[in-house]
Length: 88
Image (cartoon, rainbow, N blue to C red; front, side, top):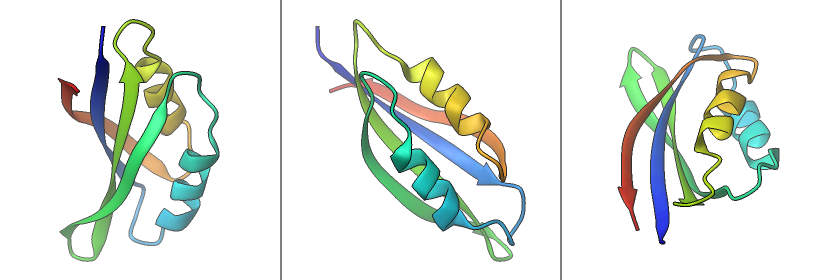
């Protein structure tokens, strides 16, 4: 079996929310079988930005759902959406 790439769109509560703090909490998270590939800021509108988080996880023993729950529980995060998945 191979690896799976998953892309998440992480929306902050407001334009005042520190994306750097959210990034730090994401990179500090220790979830087995999850490798963070990249975290990128993307403009949305009117000064609001989201984070695009790309992870790589094994197809057989994925913890993608646990990672998504962790993202949703970060203070300052309004919503988390999977925007893409694919085999690597």
